[in-house]
Image (tube, rainbow, N blue to C red):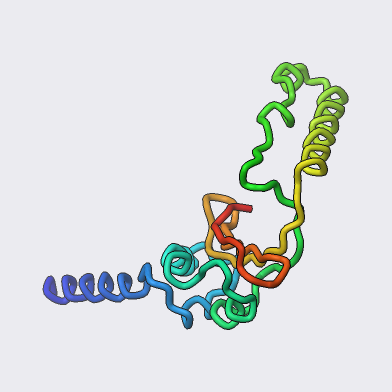
Length: 162
C-alpha cells in the first residue's frame, strides 16, 4: 500500500511539473484565454514568451497568429515611461478620514480625482494596446500588454496588474 501511495505521489508530481512548464506553449496559451482562471498556466509561461517569442517590430498579424485574439484591444491614454505621477497629486489628508465628515471627504476625493485627470490630460499620450490575461495577483487580474507603433508593429510589452 505504501509503495502505491509513493508511486501515486510521484506520478502526480511529475504530471504537475509537466503541466506547469515555464516554457511558452502556444496550444496551452490558446486553450487558456479566460480571465476568470486564477490558476491560469499563462502566468508560468509569460516570461519565456516575452524573452524568446515577442520582439519589437513584430507585425500585429504575427502577434495574433502566435497569441490569438486579445481580451481587449484599443487606444488608451497612458503616461510615457519616463513620467510618473507624483504621490501627492491624489493625496487626501488623513484627518479627513478620521473626522467622519463625509461631505468634506467626498469633496477632497473629487478634488484629488480632478488633479489626477488633469495630470493625465497634460502628460498622457495615446497608446494602441492589446491585453491578454495571464492570471491573478491576490485580488486583481494580471495582463500581458502589447504596445504598438502607429504602423501596427510591436513597440513594447510587459505584464501589469489591473
